[in-house]
Length: 133
Image: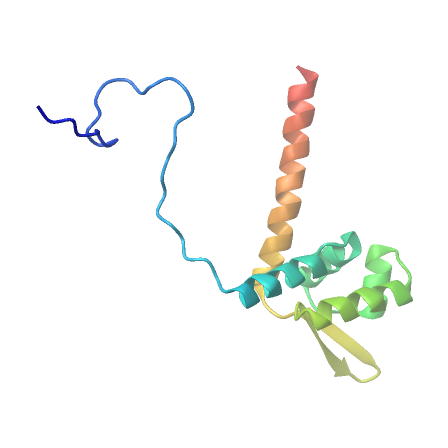
């Protein structure tokens, strides 16, 4: 008589009680440098003012004084945050006469920010709706 241990594909009938372990195929992990760089990028996006700047630049290119007016924060603060975003490769500045026009380097970063804001907004809406019941 054989005493083979059945695999999940061999088992029939209802699943056993308790937590179910699902095995997904292993996803190759990026190298350590890529993970470190991704962490640096996410830290650069982690300030509310920088998130607001990215959302503004998603609409169109802007100079510092336009960001000051749109966000209601001081020029030195906007400049400081733009330096962080520029160093992280999130924004690029191009001189246009006496002003520097800032733009997003690419849309990938805007998706990270908009997805995060959408997620938080949806979570708050769901919490409010379920809290009212």
